[in-house]
Length: 287
Image (cartoon, rainbow, N blue to C red; front, side, top):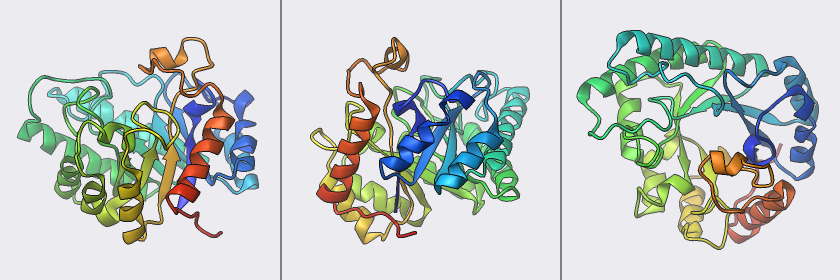
C-alpha cells in the first residue's frame, strides 16, 4: 500500500508558491499527496506535476475549495445536476492535467448539505447517472473517480459503506471506487473490519486519522481491526492521513475542527506514519 497526506495538513490553499510542500512529503517518507481543489484554488498544474514526477510522488485531488452549491448531482433540479456534472468533469480534467491517479470526495451530493429525509429513489438514480458519466469521462483520461461516505453531520446521502456500494452498483461503471474515512466511520459503523471487507476490491483508499482528526493512534478508532482487515484483503491502495493545520489562524475552525491536533504538520506525519507502519504492521508498496 501507499501512504500519503492530505494537503490541508500543510496548507489552507494549494498554490504555485507552496509546491515546495511536495519536497516535505517526500522527505517524510510518503508516497502521495491529496490536493484540495476548487474554483478559488488557482495554480499551475504543470508546475505541480513536474515537481511530483521528479520526486516520484503520486497525486490525487478532491474538492475542498469553492464548490458552487448549484453544482450538485443529487439535486431535484435537472439544471443543477447538469451544472454539477460539468463542474466535476472540470475537476477530472484538472486531475488529468496533473497526472493525478484519482478524483475523490462526496461527489454524489454536496459536502455540508444535509436534507432531513432519507435518500429518495430518484436521488440515487440521478446520482448514479451522473457518476456513471463522470466515471466514463475519467476513464478516458486515466483518472479514477472515487466516492467517500461521510458522517450524517456532513451529508444525508452516503454515510455507510453499503450506501456507497449501492450507488456503484446502480452506476455500473468499473472506473468507480470507494474511499473510507476512519474519522467519519466513528459515528456511522460499529465494525470497522466488516466495513472494510464489505467494500473489498472496490476500496481505493482510506483516510486515516483519529476520532478527533488527530494523528492515527491513541484515540477511539479500532486500529487493530483496521490492520487485520486490510492485511487480510491484501489491500494495495492508498492510506492518506487527513487533518487541518491548526497553526494557520482560523483555518481549522472554519473547517469545523476545534481541537489543536495538527499544530505541526511534520510532527503529525511522523507520528502517524510511525504508528501505521510499526503499530499496525502496514507496509508501503515497494517501488
